[in-house]
Length: 93
Image 1 (cartoon, rainbow, N blue to C red):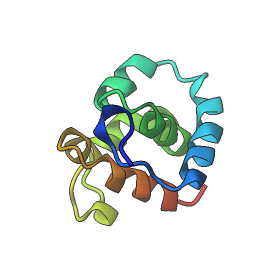
Image 2: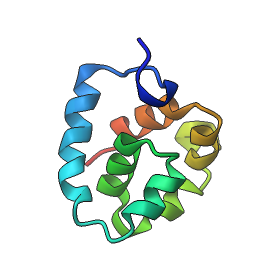
Image 3: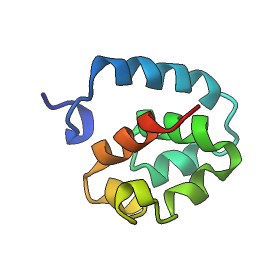
Image 4: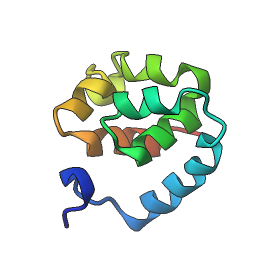
């Protein structure tokens, strides 16, 4: 099933998780910059901030072993945001 920005929808549990992350995102002082790096994918931005806080933008530009050594930003830019979502979802809180 397609949703906004052409992404495949994840399990409804992802939506619940990202909604929890959204509560913390309210306190993010660099929301616009993070949303830009996440190509407007709010749910990804919320989860990145939830896990990484002030290091969120830097994390999107790092090589992540769980993503095959790719950067989250490059995957998002390539339309492969679901891979980033799955990685974020599997990260311990």
